[in-house]
Image (cartoon, rainbow, N blue to C red; front, side, top):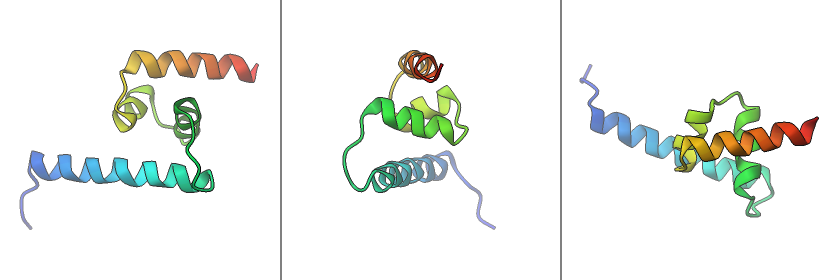
Amino acid sequence: MPKTTDKDLYSIDRKLSIVISILLKIANNGEDITLRQQIKELHSFGLSSSEIAEILGKKIGHISKELSGIKKEVK
């Protein structure tokens, strides 16, 4: 079995992020969804703030702020 390199892992991670983005659009009938909606959806799948930030290419502080606002909306 070939050894997995950091380059391989980066490539896999990038491809998975693209697949997640595509699935988010499909889930919204192909229409663009807001960043806040994307965060809400990814959070509903059980992803952490840091995982969401990595997938969406945003800073964790921004994701945490949005999640805080989302949680306040639910109350």
